[in-house]
Each structure stands twice: as structure tokens, then as C-alpha cells.
Image (tube, rainbow, N blue to C red; front, side, top):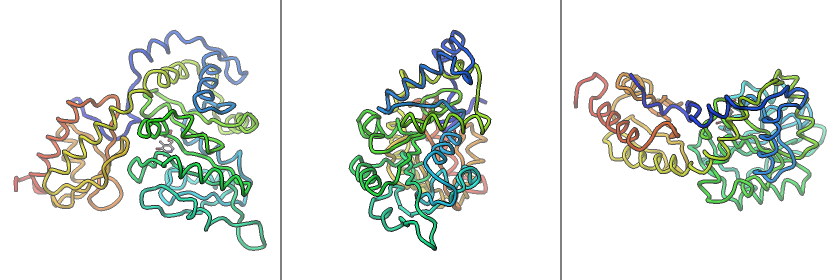
Length: 351
Ligand SMILES: *Cc1c(COP(=O)(O)O)cnc(C)c1O
């Protein structure tokens, strides 16, 4: 069975253009700084973000880990949103590698305000761990692909910097944020010091992420990448796909967002199914408690019918992501399958 795979945008496979570029890539030993394709990707990523330098890393997790490490010292706090990827899905790397603890702030839509951050900032003193870094996730994965308004980001950047605090953006999907705002990614990342973004998600590359920021920090980061086992030699074969992701895939993300809205309105019309929020980008959470299913049983029933959507935390929640490998007609078919499963009820009989 060929599945309609809505579990994540990480499932995208390299496009034909990527595979050609990978086959033809000029390569060298990147640990010596001699891979021309990696060097080009790093230059291009820095330019697109309007920053001095960039570092190609195998995963977003490594990019965030290094990003946190270059800004902080052991024993500091990192302020982040309560459902942040760095706090919940990166095996505590901020503690394990950087020796920092998270100071989590709850924001219903995943978007921190400066006021909520300000309340949590701790100065150096005899009791509390001092704040070392502010972290923002844009788009916010677990809040449903929500996007920071530019004014909010600018205020966080300016006010943090006044207090001498750096800001790191987990921009795994920052190109989705830029597409949703209709501005170049340069503007989205201008207020922050460093940003990590994934080539391996909606941009379609098979692997790789970028950490982008001031040269001084990226040079430091290069050493941490080696320590973490991320020195990748002829990585130009991967970087070649990343370059295509930047030049060809970033511009089409609006389509994924339209498909997510299409699915949201379709799902909202199915009895027993409710959509949590109209998606701003490519992530959508929905609830199926009205069908009598749990998230897990609903997901299993979809899978039997060729649609992959993962259950999310909570009793009857599911999370889907749209991406390049799922076009509008696949979305229509997926909706039909959800409608069928919802109508069947839990015992597999139509209600
Ligand atoms: C996917 C993701 C990452 C990094 O994930 P890797 O699987 O390590 O590449 C980081 N932050 C967010 C918000 C993500 O969605």
C-alpha cells in the first residue's frame, strides 16, 4: 500500500533535482574546511539569514545543542516556552551538554511575550541560577505551527539585548514562519543572535540543519560540532540537497499551508472531529473524542486504510503535517478516510 504520510514533514524524500545535485556534488573533507559544496551552503545560509556565518550540522537537535552551548555557561537558566522542543524532545541536551536548566513559561499559542519573559529573568545572586539565554521556537511545533508576530520578536530581541542576554531561535521551520508572514527570512531572524533551521523538514533535504549567527559564535560552534561527533567529511553530497531546498523549496511552502487549511476546514465538518486552531502554517492538531476513539485507535484505523497520522499527547488528539509529498488530491483522499473512520465508531461498525 502506498501511504499518504501526514506524520511529519521530515518524511519528505529528496526531489529528483536534489538527487541529481547530490550525484554531481563537488566534495572535499569538510573537517579540513575543504568541501566546496558545504562551504557554499554555509555561505548561502548565512546570507539568507543576514548573519555573518553558518554551520552545517547533521540534525536540528545538534544545531540547538550547539546554539545553547555557545551562549551559556554551566549553571545558568534558559528561558523557553513550556512545550519547547529543546525542553521536551531533545533528551535534555541543554542539561547534558551545556549544564543549563530550562525555565519554562506557559504560552497558550506557544508565542512568548516580552512581559512573560521579563518576569522570569533572574540576575546573578546568592540563590537563583542566573538567566543565560532566551529561546524562542518559530514556528512553534507543539502549539500547532504558530508564528511569532514580527513586533513581538523585535521587542524580545531589543529588550533582551538591553539586559545583555542573547536570544536563540529554534527555527526548525523558520521558512514556514517567513512564508506565513510574507516576508524574507532575514526579517524574521533579524532580532535574534542565532537561529537553527532544518533542511530536512519542509525544505525536503534528506538530512541536515544549519546553525547561523555571528562568526565568533559559529567558529566556537564548529569545535562543539566535532566534540559531538558531527564532523562529517564529504558532506557535500548532503549539502547539495540542502542548497536545492533553499533555492527551490522555500518558495513553495505557502502551498503546504493552504493544504493544512484545506484539511482543517474539511476535518471541522466531520461529526465527532474538532480542529484546535486554524493552522497558520503546516501543522494541525485535531481531536476525535466525539467519535469514541482514542488518538491511538483512530491512528491505527487510519493506517489500515493507507493514511498515516500520529496520535498526539492527550486522550483523543492527533497531529498532522502537510508537506511537498502530499498534494491537494492526496489531502482530499485523506479527508475521505478520516470521514470513514469517524463514521465507523470504535467497534468498527457504522453509527
Ligand atoms: C524537528 C525539530 C527540531 C530538530 O529535530 P531533528 O530531528 O534533531 O533534526 C528542533 N526543533 C523543532 C521545533 C523541531 O520541530
